[in-house]
Amino acid sequence: MLKKKNVFVLVVLFILLGIIIMSTSCATKDTETGDSNKGDTRTEAIDGNETESAENVETAKLQPNLGAADFGGYVFRVLNRTTTSPDAIDWIPRDVYAEAMNGETINDAVYKRNAYLEDKYNFKISQIFWDSAEITKYIARIIQAGDDLFDVTYPNFANAPVLAQEGHFVNLHTIPNLDLSQPWWDQRANASLSIGGKLYFTSGDNAMVNKDACPAILFNKKLLAENELENPYVLVRNNQWTIGKLYDMCKGVAKDLNGDGAMNYNDDRYGFIGQRDSLTSFLHGAGELIAAKNTDDYPVITFAERAFKAMEGCFDLMYDQDVSHNAHHLEGIVPAIYEVSEKMFMEDRALFMWCRLRIVENLRSMETDFGILPIPKLDSAQTKWGHTVNRYVGVPMCVPITNKNLERTGHILEAICAESKYTTIPAYYDVALKTKFARDAESEVMLDIIFNSTVYDVGEIYNFGNFGYDLIFMCMKNDRNLASMFDKYLPKMEKDIEKVIEKYGELN
Image (cartoon, rainbow, N blue to C red; front, side, top):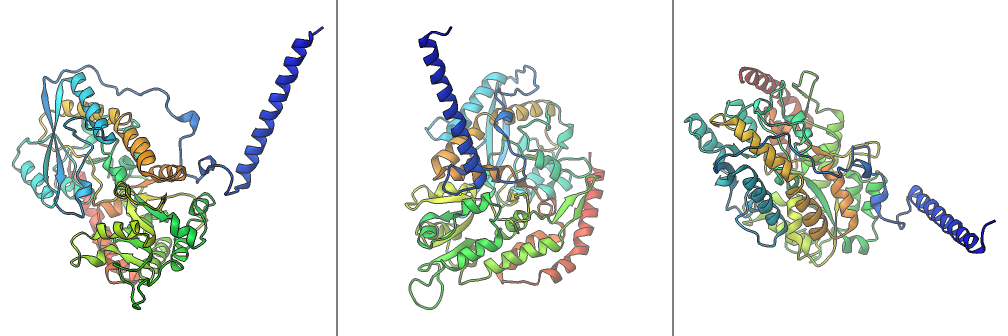
């Protein structure tokens, strides 16, 4: 027989077990009903994109498949861009070199990563800067002269294809010690940027700036509440965050605050602040591309009916000048057009602002709370999100053909990229962006969506027929004649694809 004491213990255990089962059942019910007032949106399944579940998150640090090496104090030279332009200064690289620890999360992570690798393999990292407006010409000139002045370079995605087709870069698949199948290399970039199996530039965790280059929509929580608008986090969760919904929400918030009968960036309130690059971003947000790859790894134009619909929705929003402010309409009027947009948003004079994620850090002093959202979809039938890695500020990794020791270069690049996965990327993503700059837990989920759905559009990056470039300039004159423009550009786009395939076929 059980003693009274043991019976009492069993009764208590059964009661506790019952409470746990009831709690679990209630939590499950709240999640299934989708009640916007229950729990955190992080518990919800957002979309059909591949995301890491808790059981798939790596618990142990993966090591690159590299042997021991002593590079004898070799100075590894990285050529990067710099600028004095107030509209581009945010894009000076900060992920390559740090002189010393200074208490800043990202700086210190870069310093620690470099110190660890420099000690392990006995080399030093050196960063060489060249003005961003001239770096493409500089790279071409140095390589054509046969000068070995840098081991690796990071031009932007707009210029890398031109340099690659001129034969200035090494096919990354041929570099010893580079294992591009590893998780610290961006598999979307590898798949999208190769042509005919040859890859002359790509991205990985060593290029933190390519996360900065991803787009997002910021929203002002104060204006949202004052206008009694729907919670956009719930719209995202319910797959109702679309271009049309964004436009509808903007209409009721825009207002001529000074009563002069005309909307003005100095005084009035807008529903939406955007810029030229927003057009491409909305195209990719709709799940569409200018060009994709066929089974032979060659580009084919895919811009079709659904892409036209996405652009029409974008035109409706951005061309309504009573609702939307286009930053680029201030070119030649103010010295720093993006600073004006940030100021307007911080002064509660816009409900939504399109931006690249680097800009979130500039809003640290904003008094009103804001949230971070993914780029809207075209419609609720769409299952996946899409977020452009911007071709003008994003940077691919390129190795010049003048490089004298590819084995050493491959070893160092693989080591840097692998170590970045566990140092600089967590510092950027989990500490700086999610904790220091984002204002709420929901934004963390939105950032996961953004980073899990990056897009490298081969048609935009290679700019076939100049279509991608001229597409974004349509918004400078509120041009809606997209169909006639596309028909005009299509033959040149297809001819450019043929040229790229031919040129790549001639390269090693």
